[in-house]
Length: 284
Image 1 (cartoon, rainbow, N blue to C red):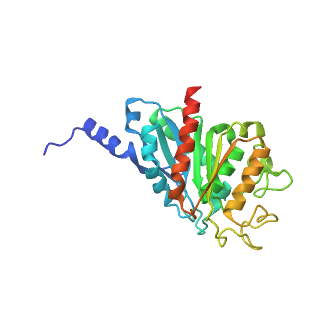
Image 2: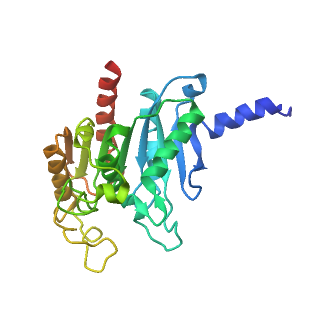
Image 3: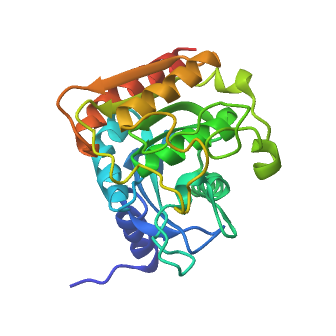
């Protein structure tokens, strides 16, 4: 069998690991954190792509589910998919939920995602100064808080079934409200920028279990008002939608009949929303 020359081998390796369903990459900004992508092969020929960042839930395995679940959408809509992977216990303490609130120890997860996007934009020679973001469950936590903090970076946001929500309440501190947003993150709340982002919120109407989302005194993320947005995920997401709408945000709300806490059964709705926004964005 004839061996490949060096140039051929490099090209073959790039085609296998850098395009289509990619290998898992460590972030240059923080190698403790990783990412996996779907990149339409046409990008290798210089085709310009938009970007969707899809954020996993508490189990982390949905990073692969989302990479693969959005692959066909990405191929036919000229959109790359970037799925961050934030390992459980990244600080050695077994903690599962730090990323949901954007900060954990010395890690600012929002800043790491921005660095991942910049790193991959450079790698694939793309302009991803703005991108879309979707997350479900734990990822829904992350996405709506990222949207509050960095609306200027997004051309769309889809928020799926978060267990707890941060309302745009200036009388309560983070994470229940946003009173200390600037002191905590170095950025003030800018409702005029948030109002420019098309926002989608989605939850199953049968997503009613509360064992994992009820905050109790003594819990790591317990604070006054932690359960005030409602008992169930549909109630809490409805409260978030109301809060966003009062700030002037155009919110598309899907409450899916007969669906419980099932990430894969909501992807069709998410794709429809993103395709509509992409069409409108590209027509401008």
